[in-house]
Length: 426
Image (cartoon, one colour):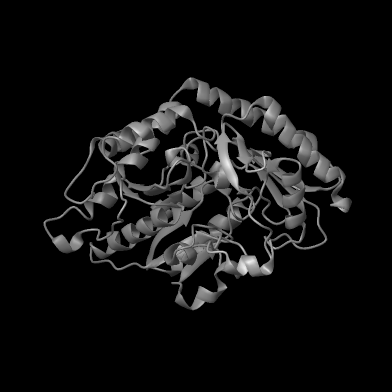
């Protein structure tokens, strides 16, 4: 595709420099773990298409439920009205969540985080105790709206907007061997700031940071400290939710549990855009009042869209089957075996896994970052081989849909080994 054509392209793609990017691949259909392009090529989707697809593309059960819903009710305003899909989804989702009692629907991961941040700030405001600062992990990612950018890593992606982001206090994640260091950082911050509203974190896995992982015990210690100082905690489960870590939610590994939780991506099985922010009774009670000014004045046009609710309920149908969890356990075991097998390869800098998530850092003379030049070479290598693997710089990760078979996962592992073996020729 020529520069002139790219310049006239009406579509502006995300995270894409339109002048230098390769032409986008036209995908015409998806089935199970595969995507098919207009030329008949197929790609094994090893990353669940930006981490959203749980059960495979065009799953017939989800498609059937969405189709039926479209013939009944496609949308209704969710203020002063409700519908059966939202009521059922609320009950079923909360039934799987640890110590959460209320749910607020929105559109995507960033808006789920925005709602959580507003809940936390107004929780204190409604009680006459203005607290406006947040604590977050270094190199975290929570989305691309302004509040979400503020509590995420301040890097090249959001540099033009630094003057407009609110103040956030950062600590290092409690990776293995650094748990005490992280906890001491948090203690010092809480002891020296009385205006901290909440601590927000990606539980156990920091996705965009390169699938950086930490143990439950380290994060539990940080939540304990927040409880000691009566600070709210927000778990951003947009990526880690719905089985990715080997349990329903990463927060299932934690005790005590978070005050507020954020969901999107896998909520609808990757079928439609939808998000949810949940909270415990203590948060909700701070808004429950005869005073209308204590209302959470937030909403979206497509809040609790009936079709998205139908997709979410269909995805829950599949997640609640033992067969799905057998597949998750099979993927988890195979990923662990591969991690153990490949960790001593001379071109491997580090390897890690949790649940179905696997990550490998390639040795590289350049620093580890999203802009590592190895990234584009790896991406193209995997595409030519028929695999959708989207590196985070020199870090490659696998986050497959649960329909991925042992043979398909073996093929993904083999193409990564091939890249490692021929790294100097890529």
